[in-house]
Length: 497
Image (cartoon, rainbow, N blue to C red; front, side, top):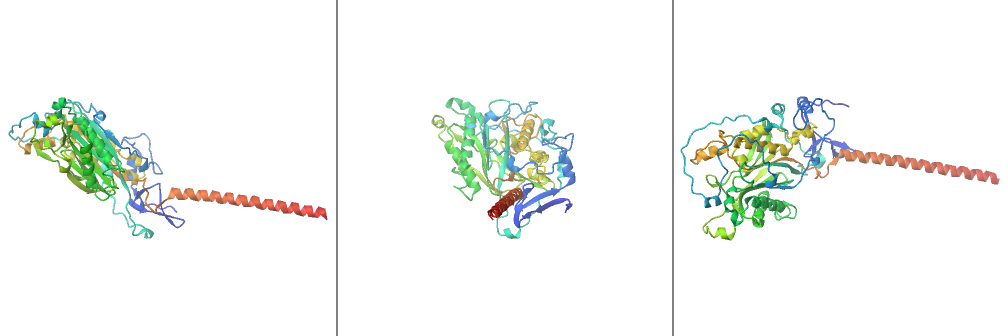
């Protein structure tokens, strides 16, 4: 029987030979399969490729085009060698990158300037920023599409955990500032993320062996290692506190890094439906969620500043340099702010160095993200391969921040922040820019207990059917053999008579 489904989201499951089962051809949400019936959205997506570009012919697919489990989930630690040295090289902002507690070694206090009002034009970004994104029509097509509350599991599964395992599908992009070395670093992992922003002004102490870029990279390397299985901040060592896991990973990076330098740092740890965060300084993270009328920021970390343009940071100095400043008070990993954030499938996590925070307003971030297609929305209509990869989102946001940083007339967030502290400036803030983007997706490598896959069941039924046919064939061969033996015996007895 063919049933035409009404428009909207439908939850369903199967019974095969009396057993509860889920289909591998549809997205799993809790203990159900789900699909979104929307002819306008399907028509819009089916004529576009994975980069949101129009194709000459339709690309409608009748089966699930890809599975979340097919996506790449590599663990990566990125350092200055990963940075894009080009970006968009037009114009030039008026603000140099932040200095630090250690930067005060070589600088006096800045003079306060008179406040002046300014206006931000919020000019459109260059067309290169939008490469790989959909047009604004996508937001209209998705308007009103919000996953409702997942129904209770079927009767035979009541009382069991109806949730599903989650993981992070992440990508990153770095852009080096126009002048000087890149000191940013990051790591991505299926269940963890991190960003470190090495303090560039520490280059003035290079003769003491200071290397902020190497220090930031080591912080990421050891923080990432701490979160892995068997690590000091792994789930088996700290089972029920994701914020403590993130903070412990940061502390491990602080204790194990051997290079000298200074760096802000942010670490995230995902476990189940919780995201734990530890942030020290002006790097940070935000979590966005699809609502009725598009994406919105539900959580954003607060920056930590000692004073204007002087963020908290981890610092490791040689004794010869420490001896020059015996009263110097250094920040520690234990000074970080901790966060525990409930997350769900379809959320978007963005981590960033201050190169993004200082140059892009939240509304600009949301506007760009609303041109992306979340994996969950794509999977609900059976076109998962049209979803926007996280590395595309990271590159878009990094390039957008870079464009603003090179705009001499832009009123970026850093301008407003400076004005509140009595400093008047205009134009983007040139800096290294690092963005890590991660979709929260179902962990299909961890199937729900008690839920069988229709594909597996059908395959077993086919094998059983083939085995039954073969058994009947062998029985028939044996019957014919016995009949032939009986016939020959009777013929022999007849001859003997």
